Image 1 (cartoon, rainbow, N blue to C red):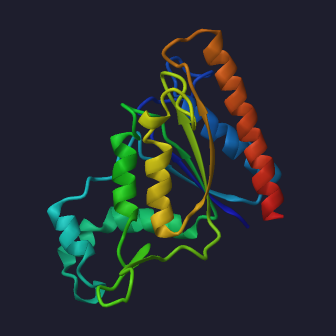
Image 2 (cartoon, rainbow, N blue to C red):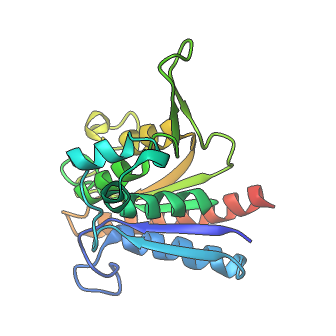
Length: 225
């Protein structure tokens, strides 16, 4: 049985196409999850809406708790890490992670950055040993076979590789870097552009992105089989 972790991070509620002023990324993640569960009705879907309920940002107390060995943590430290532990547990149990991450001012929403900060955990998702020769850091999820599907949206256009605004796209690059640090390097995705224009170009971009989502489901399904 496949476990699918479905994450939304848009500040908009509802999906475009069905909700006035709805989210394009929610539209794409919903499409992916629906298509996947049609093919795999026995899949377990875990939903996390960090756009509506953002994880708490990392604080000094969080850092102290996370870098204290678990067996000597004080009770307040376990309380401080409770949300982070839940997010890490969801990630560890997931086979496929489907993340809706819109571009806000050239990067991911603050809520998704907070999510990343909560799942990058020493001893749980990455290892650290200052006496280790060479690189003291190493990923703990490298052999877990996890796959990441990143579904994004942008107000402008031309953020793809080699395009006019490629150097300003800090969504895919930052998400890829963070997950690769944990050992999740199999990342694919799709994006809707032209949201701020609202004309036929937006409609065409939505159609292309939805077709790409369908292709991703088919390709991942073939790999799983």
